Length: 365
Ligand code: IPM
Ligand code: MG
Image (cartoon, rainbow, N blue to C red):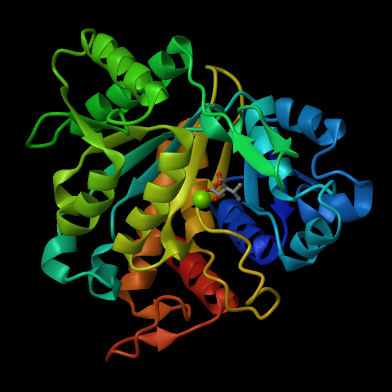
């Protein structure tokens, strides 16, 4: 037996602890792991006075992979409303992404066949959708200089800056991913680089740099699309996209939009990857859903699918990853649905987190 891989678990706030506990049961069913639980986000502010401690960052660095639930909630929003200097839970998430150098965020969007009817979009539009959003995660407006100036009642600013090396490396991630995805597929790899080059200087550098990188990938078809147009195309012809590569803020927005193609934000997993050999971080795209926390009805599937991404990309356990994905598809095909996916159609059964988890475990047997 090889040594057990060490997973740092950051459950966080809201539904985070519920969906992460459910996912650990599933992980335990496919292989033995060593877990180390740590605090992040609001709960860490409450316990430690800060959304992310150095000890937690160090523990993540020493792990093989990090599994995260969600951060944030109204309690801490109110604290910030009272005192603008108070910390936000989200700072913990941004902090760990930066500290681990996780510059590439991969968000695959491929509606499960059983859920095609659950999307708010017409079935014929969704069919065939299989795209990957590659979001830059440690630069841009999220990490630029920001602040307030006290002129005339106050001005606030957030700088959006990108350097050539930052754009170069995320573009390479996208081209490489496009090549991998095209293996054994009927059509060649395609990358759509999304920007706002008709307005923003940072976008013009983005576009120039992506064009240069494309020279190293002559087999990959590249096109450039403005972000507003992309938002429209994503709902009108989602099946035409392959890999979308874009900056931090545009990727945040477009991936929530793309998530609805799968029927629910509760379905979308993500992988955040940094330098070769460093641990990645795996988390659902959705947030902490404080309105349903503690009710036992949260959809754990995005976290389970994130764990599958962890096995595939972070721990080189592709077979085990595939087993989880197949089990999730089978459970959806059987009609079992948490409320976010439940439409009341014939053949569907409404279920809570525990029942959905039990169904996935049963499929894994
Ligand atoms: C996401 C989330 C985060 C982000 C928030 C919680 C800071 O929306 O992972 O998409 O904006 O990156
Ligand atoms: Mg988001």
